[in-house]
Length: 116
Length: 119
Image (cartoon, rainbow over all chains, first blue to last red; front, side, top):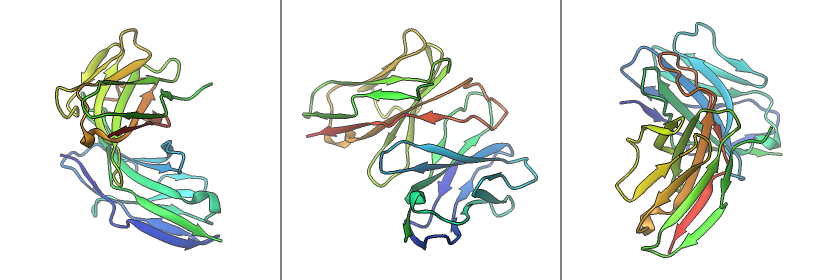
């Protein structure tokens, strides 16, 4: 069964600094996808970035990048030049890529607070 | 175009009552998902529709929970004989195809959720 672990319940970061949010996962499958979502106080889950298990390069989307270390089963999110608007909950999620399995499994999240 | 919408945004009910939560997915999205997010937790999968049929309902906690999507668009999550433990935010998501299969990519677009409080 797939499992996601996020060990940082909360983080405080100074504005304009970079921040790394940790995510480790457990799966016996060879093919899977990793996702990061942002959840502001409004409650809506906003998709940030995706990494496939067979992707050789780390995914990047603007200020977001994913530090994917397959052997360690980690998929940490890096946010560069943090902004006040980055304050939110961040969730790591996984989908095992096989027919019949379309669900995402989420971690417990990290609450990021950006300090001006 | 409009995103996923959910109504009501908040629902307060008494223990033992019946509730319905509605989800209107992005137009053209064939797949629809329901998740439940308890306080301090990440979303947990409940059920997934491909078109009108429930393709995976393995996350429904018990037979008090039921969901329908009769015309392949709007979905309703129904909870009978509500219990205090049902209090949570119920999130709906949709995706374009929902048949990613052996491709791991399947971006799901989430709605704002319905906060259910059972007194």
